[in-house]
Length: 130
Image 1 (cartoon, rainbow, N blue to C red):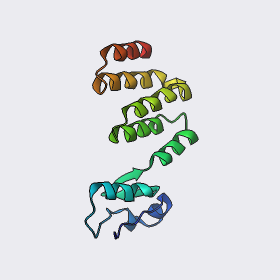
Image 2 (image 1 turned 135 degrees about the horizontal axis):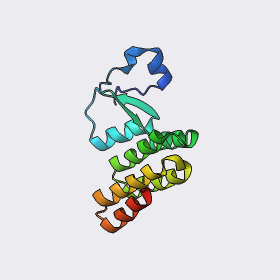
Image 3 (image 1 turned 90 degrees about the vertical axis):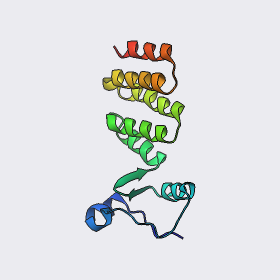
Image 4 (image 1 turned 30 degrees about the horizontal axis):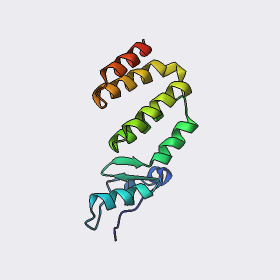
């Protein structure tokens, strides 16, 4: 068993002692640890906020014009090696937040260039961003 506890943002704000890094009293494999942490909606480990995909999707749906919510969800997918889902997030952001569409197009181009190694598709996205 593990002594880690997940706390809601409200609990962290009301009691600053909870915001310090969590300590684990057991040795867990990385996969078990990740599954344990991701089963909670929200927690802090070593000062880094961990959120689930659903939590981030909820933030995007509540604040579709907030650019950082789309980018956080995109980063979450990239950290899990889900390039196509990260690109889907940005494509949806183009429709949801037209004011920043050029920035999302540019990011899609960056992903296509850096991860997919698709120079032609990246160039097309860069042109759309202009």
